Image 1 (cartoon, rainbow, N blue to C red):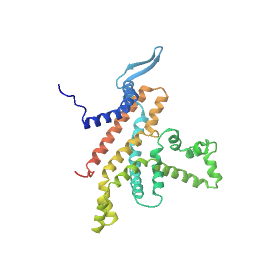
Image 2: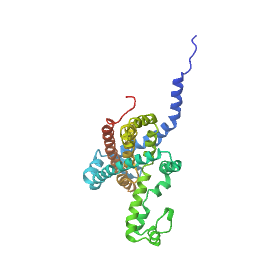
Image 3: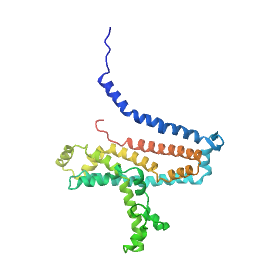
Image 4: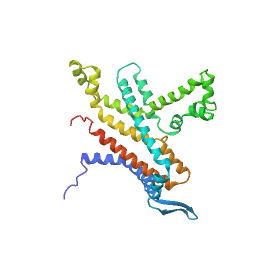
Length: 298
């Protein structure tokens, strides 16, 4: 009688990995896959409330045709969103790379500086993100409403006026401060990934470059930039996806508005068309950049 053999080491490792991922897989199936399949059904249906509850009637591509040809706002909003992405993502990447190069240097207070820039990675959800991502200062000036958050119950405009700032300075300062804050808040993950890539570059390569008489500028373009180019690709893909999926994106807000208006089937159609546009753009970005990436060892 043959003795029954146990699992090999590689099989035990694979089993451990599967068990580790099992909660996520179950959560995905229950919390994501089922709603996703329902949204596909809604996108091709007309929804009506009856005595028996929600009634769905198959209408084919009607919701998609309405969005493309009957709703003038949808296509225009997507075009504006793509335009803003093209303008904002390069700024975020350049800023993230610059900050990561600074944080990779040795200086006093480096740990505190890293913590400040990594704060968006830590605080990324809940009411804190909602408060910090809302331009309460500008909103209070434009509408005269009272600001909430850190200045609950006190209008932000009144605070700045009470500080003696001129009206023209306030009008210039608030948008600039908000843009800087938004840039820093949108760059935390990118800085983290760039910094991880910088720390993998061997110091010996810089030593050889210095011995050969290369300047810091030449060392950056011939050593640093090529070796962190895989991280650049990851950051570009992440930044594009993050911009298109943030709650402040105008297309996302339009879809949420349709959901608030109880037009679930139309919102589902808008969502799937928007997903198709985002996937095409991500595929194009990956295809274009992947040919220019330097992979060590290949």
